[in-house]
Image (cartoon, rainbow, N blue to C red; front, side, top):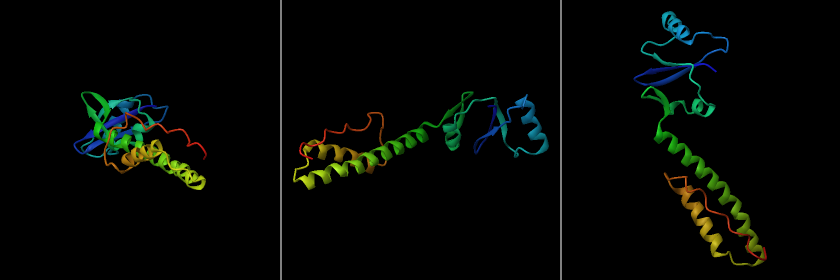
Length: 144
């Protein structure tokens, strides 16, 4: 898909062109000439491939050294929020194991208490590094 990347002091924008557009530079020039492009916006790249994820994160796009890139802080923050969401799902699922222990009269094993504490720490931390991954789920307690 053909895209035009526009830049101004306030940010970056993308114009997605129809598949049958032959010349994206001429299209940008026409947009400027007709007033379809706001004053101050300058086309800086043509026919750039942009992933759906990048389009959703348009606020994180920036023009750097002649190449389109994502703002590292924004990407890191989004990755951490996704990591937290995964940890919350696992924490919620672990409630079932604790309930099974309670119903069977079995003490919750230390491995499960440590696992749940690690997940809670991830869920409650404002920032972090998702690269170490999520803690490994222990085996189900015997007798549950």
